[in-house]
Amino acid sequence: MLKQVSIFAENKRGTFQSITGILQDENINILGSITNDSAEYGIVRMIVSDTEKALRALSANGYLCRSNDILGVEMEDEIGSLNRLLISLSDGNISVDYIYLCFNRDTGKPVLILHTDEIREVEEYLKSRGFLVQ
Image 1 (cartoon, one colour):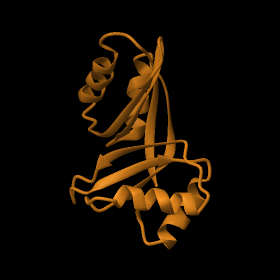
Image 2 (cartoon, helix red, strand yellow):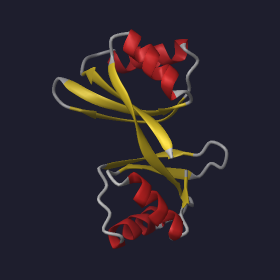
Image 3 (cartoon, helix red, strand yellow):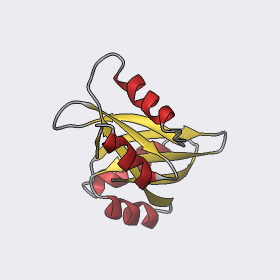
């Protein structure tokens, strides 16, 4: 199971660069990221090389942030791979809050990041169907 940092940030020019600058100063690598925004605020979700250190550094710089468990499912880089995974989730009647893609830097394969309320059950379900869950 992976950990993700979620950062509640003001939607204004330079905010994302401020966040990445803080992480750079702390020698923390960003492995995957997605942003969701609204008119005034947004949520930046990141997988980083040191979750606890990132939380401390970002909080010390005034950002409201937290960590949560997510699943990473490594897939083949081929047509239909994502669709097969989504069909399996649907077949299992699994509700997913959000997904995004990043890559396994060692294998070069895509990794689907997903969040669900039933994270441990979903992890076991996907493993039982032959998916490589990180």
